[in-house]
Image 1 (tube, rainbow, N blue to C red):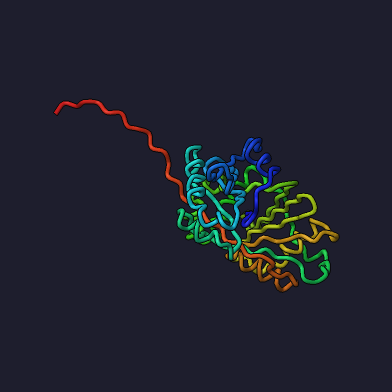
Image 2: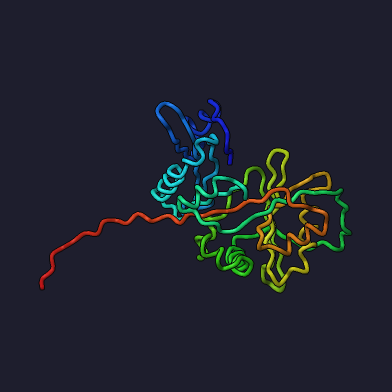
Length: 275
């Protein structure tokens, strides 16, 4: 989110005049002046959307509530059931967003390295494999076991809702799963975009003892000469603890807010009945 940011003609052309086919730009205008620009796009499926970018000046920020509401209406008209918004925890937009119907779902911490990485012995690595289509339900079960119910009730309760709510990562994305006794117990994603590598993991709460091994395997996969960042939901406390013990530190904190969108109701047809 770009807040307190003056829109340039380049950004206006990028998002307003010719946005990518999956992105849609909505503007807040006063007279002939463009005060704010919101960019919304679907996530993995059409039922879940996200407000991917919001450009606004500091003066216009407190008046962005209507633009946020319009973004929700826009997504709902296209089949959206949820609109996601990621904000820094100290963002002044959080109050505006909650007034516009967004509810905090969970928090995320971004971890960076604070000391030189020391490779672990190869014998301590876990065996990860690429997921198959047949793993979809197993991943959904892992999600149900790993994510608190209060988060799932906002993000998605059904297999379809969960699948639609998955984020699209830029660049080259690779996913891996770890299983024990035929059941998926861990998931890992690496995303390479430009010079940045982002790591994410989901671990079954009963497998906290292997959190360090999951982190080690992730670092082995991205290579020794790469300094990645980890994005860790706060409910994945075992992963956070393993990173902290290995010398990683939180550099940024975010809140994920979600707005539940009202579905369009078709007008019912009426016919006379005989009493």
